[in-house]
Length: 286
Ligand code: SAM
Image (tube, rainbow, N blue to C red; front, top):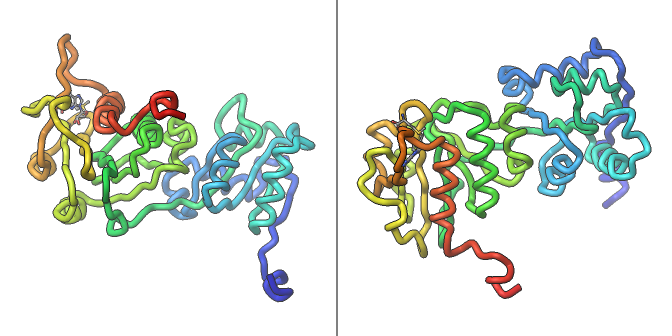
């Protein structure tokens, strides 16, 4: 790096904050509301491991907040140094401030504020045996976060949010992802944009439906990209999305329940679609 480049490199700052009235704290607290997350293109993630993973995966940190009690903790100091080197802000705060930011009585020692990232739909080019999941108007943050965690766990490629959905960057969703928010690319589309994009999908578009005629275990998913389309929690898949699927699959049920929970149904499907690709290390000969 040249001397000029070194000179231009942004250098962050470290500040100590104890007052809830501090404007920096107010801005971070405001991230609890979608309006402010959208305005600031930002979101919060709690926990040292998550923040380290996010930085390792190339996410851009805006602010690192850590508890005074973590002062001297080697891992926290290292992540603070990385944050400062990236030109971002580090706030050392009281427990009271951390509790207010995270709305928790026993907050984690570390909170990171990151820039939101979406993948443009046109940049998704499925190939090989790639698996993508599309969720139609998902409403529940716990469901969305759990689906993202499962996509990550099975090694699927990412998620497409269709229509008006709950925010993948809300605190509840991020918590439910257990860190997978940083590993799973997210695209978003209106139903019209999704239907237009689907026309050039080079593999199997598998919808799931309570009236599906095909047992989900009877399909050979291998050797081609798969797009798994899941319906809204209350209404299921609307007709125009169901009609765009190559197959409508059903997971058999025996008891009195009308349907499975969305995140559970997605997990059952993903494990079937990825069945041959997923092996324990011993089976894979490692
Ligand atoms: N009342 C809704 C309906 O009529 O479709 C129930 C929706 S269910 C809670 C949410 C989504 O999970 C469904 O749209 C479907 O994608 C999936 N799902 C749940 N149980 C399923 C099953 N037994 N077979 C196939 N898909 C299922």
